[in-house]
Image (cartoon, rainbow, N blue to C red; front, side, top):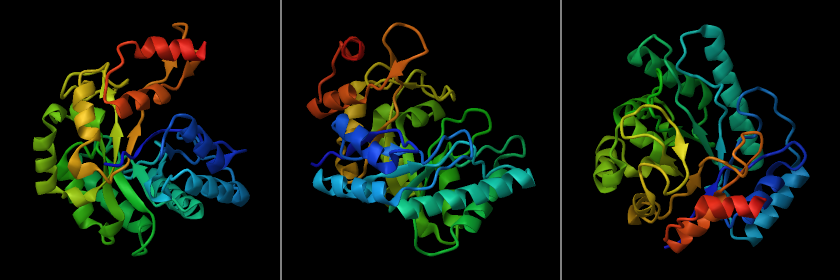
Length: 302
């Protein structure tokens, strides 16, 4: 089977999509995910058409299908909020992200569904549905991929039932799908180590045809911890073999897998850290765990 694997990469003002493609290729990837600007603020630089076209040419040459490339919406979007000003901001900012995705020819946008911040699950879900209906006014266009969340604080999208409730109540729900996150599923209380059972449950409630992408992350936490702390592949509680079974699962072979594992410090400090993706992807391609993973990463960047 063809492995569609990548990671989170940077997107800079100067290089734009071209820089993202170059970084992905340096890790041995055939897809990738990026923010179109900082996830914590609203600043967005204009999209450089020339750089974008150059990026597309390289992608075509290197067999990166742009349909597998993903934008991650910024964290500051919270459609579940009851605060009118914040809700309107979330809707308008997500509309802008959809337009930027169209300009870049990217068809998938991963979105954290939102946190209800005390108003309760039912009202929070209603707000998310309302917000998505305001954003997805056209029948065709980029797809919003609701990410499965760990259940930290008042996060929504932590259960398959919540996700299904959102999807079935969005008018143009052909433009709403799901991004599974292995760490988040574990932390939310789903047994990722029994992945066939998990997929069967998801299929009954939401439908396998609604899986658009998968974030491949190990977890620092035990199941149902509701903490959302990613770990490097094979080092966490999910484990290498279980993640390999997910990555190479026959029912998910056409679905892009994206790593969001922690950067590595080479000297024990937090001032400068380095991406582990090149080494983790090599392990995944070999289907063999490297017990010296962190040591090799540190030696490579020294």
